[in-house]
Image (cartoon, rainbow, N blue to C red; front, top):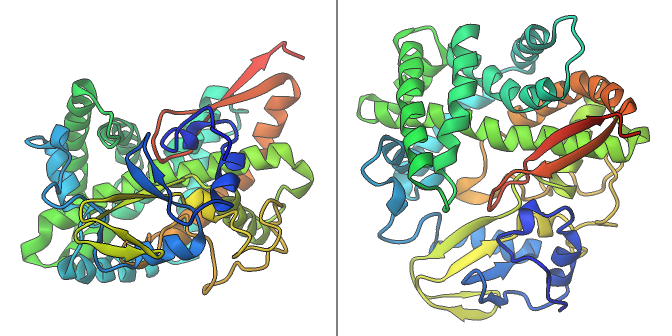
Length: 391
């Protein structure tokens, strides 16, 4: 294998990591990567097996919370997130969360999303700064209003969540943790108002969680906002990039937009990798791995796996074989930690894409479009720049 100019943990933010992923797909099933200290899983079959393996955990044994977050408000929230815990209790509560999310109708989502977009854009053509704000704040504002927040509170939540997510990367420093703690306090106050409204979606979820899990419910309401900020916004941004690169395929209606963002989640997903930690010795992909081993699951590579996808390097939003409820990409994970909000994320992304793409297209007519990927180990989160006068 040709030695790349970046490591597996830097791949998500590279301009084009896919040649590297392709080489991994052509190599050993589960190679050990000395740079990251992880075994690398790139194929659909290997990743699926790890995600459903009984000894593969979402956190290292004995470290439910990263050391840098221990003793902090953001650490308390982290410890209660269902996506960061394992076990039967996690599964019981996740089933409740899935059921409540599934009860949100497409019509409800569309109404709130369109209202948020109308308020954000109005009759003024957005500039580059506003485009980025629309991408990253709209999904949070939509979810916040579903939780029961009024529009003004939802705007505050969208700003605060950007500070909360600063604590999540492994490289977060003391300033990041401090900013996250302040954001948690503000977000908890906003969520508490939702919980006090007996008619709100938040209160319904908390009631189902039960009196012994009220704080867990509140933490996971905050977690829904953080996932909207990163994963859903990243899906929108990557979809705009694909529209820019293949404008002839840009969606023209809601049905096409849903197919488009689903193909983007395979072709250039916002969540490029995730990790699993072995609680016991295990045999994975024919290899004996020791307890404590870390496996880096390259979800983005799996989206290009030729053993699973026909013509994986082609972007085919409207005739992609394999997209179905049974066989789809792994960008929203699988098994105990499969994202319960996939359909909501795809619908929000599709609605925002239809509204923002025409403005995005107009902006690039008089300026050079560039973008960079924000620092992240696992997220592919584009930030756009429109340089006027460059043409």
